[in-house]
Structures are given as structure tokens and as C-alpha cells.
Image (cartoon, rainbow, N blue to C red; front, side, top):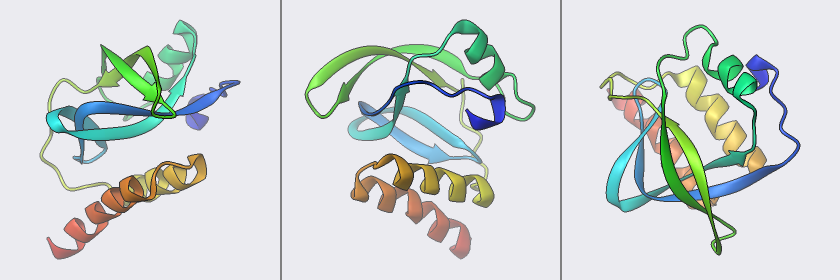
Length: 126
């Protein structure tokens, strides 16, 4: 969002159940019946969406209607932007570092941050 000058007034931590995350090379979520992913929930305009997803190198992301929870209680309908397919590439380590830093800054759960950090170990052993 910072690269595209999008600064939402309100940012909430949201949980999306029924999905898992891969980094190939960037964050890519996909349906998985026993997993959950965390991220941020923001309200943005169509113009802001165009700026965010129009940044060079971002790639194609398609909107998917989902239900997320905030504070593990409130169900909120949202659009989640997902790539149409997985790339099966190694994680982009600089991107992963920024993702982990953002997760810590936004207060995502520690066990989820630990899951993200495991992608660093996967790259180190490959």
C-alpha cells in the first residue's frame, strides 16, 4: 500500500479461515479446509485499488468474496485479492522480510508470524 500511496484511515487485523498461504515468490493464498491466514482489512476506493494492483511487478490478482473475522468475533464480508494460480517459485526473501515486519507491526498472532518465518528456513535449506 505504501508504494502506491494508499493510507487507509482504519486498519484491522482479520482472519480468513479455510485458506493457507504460500510464498511463490510473493504471498499467495489458496483454499485449504484446515488452515487460516491473517492479514489486514482496509476500506479503499476503486482508484486506490487500481493504484495498488497497478504497481509494476505486482502481477494479476482477482477479487474473491470472503467472510473474515476481526477480533475472532465479528464476521465481515470482504474482497480478498488472490492470484489465479500458484507459481511454485522460491520465496522472494526481501519481500518475505517486509511481510514479516508488517505482520509484527500490525500485531498479527505470534504463531502466524512463526509460520511466515518458516518460509525463510525453507529457502535456506533449498
